[in-house]
Image 1 (cartoon, rainbow, N blue to C red):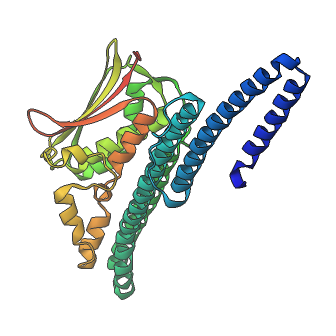
Image 2 (cartoon, rainbow, N blue to C red):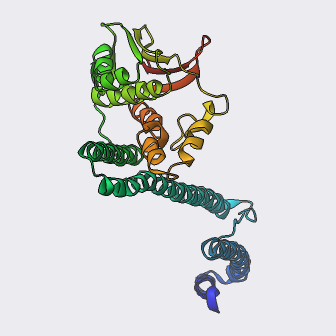
Length: 348
């Protein structure tokens, strides 16, 4: 009997029940009761066998999905509760397929990210390895001090890179704690640009602030300050000596906006769609970084350029997005790059 054992037992039980009813029926009605019972039993058996076959077909298709990874279309059942079950199974398989594809995409993205991280960390470590012999061979105290300062700068950049990567990982994992409280945007900007004062002076880049002291938004002050700092740092590094980086804060009925503009060459058209992608450095920066390791000086110069890592703007966008804000990049009509942060007040 195999898988039909339960069905056979049900039919036998119904046959016995029909026989008992016919036995106790009046003599003139026994034949009619027995005939009606036989017809009903035959109908039940035919419907049950058909349903059993449909269910067994669904079971085989599910087995194909589970063991062979095939995409099965549950379209053989047209009506009844089995058709409803078939439809639900089709939805389940479609969702499982999407989940599998998503996991496969995330696994590939993680593999690519690990490869990028490995490459980005290996570059400054290679430069540090090249600087060590220079320190060892330095005879004059002045030359040794210079080489030691170079090493310190490289180590700071490695530390910055690792810290930034950990912050991005926390944002990706949803483990970053973001406070939602009223924040004064002007104070956030001043907090963001304060650590860059020395670097701006060394590069001979002017910083202009146009701040609305009354502008406020609901967000996290420390994370917003870090995002603004990364953007200002990026603009500073792409602004020639004598240029200006301008930070503007304004507020209207819809949003509180923080805008950062520079007087540099702007963003290349081919780079603009990828400006916030992780480890994307643009054509010019990528070419410059490719020479790291050719000699000690070029490796050291590459490490001292934070923009060469291509994660500062990515982190800034992640920090702003985690607070419900938006960050967009564009070029000014008069020249230079422009970055606009907006924290909306109303959500429609």
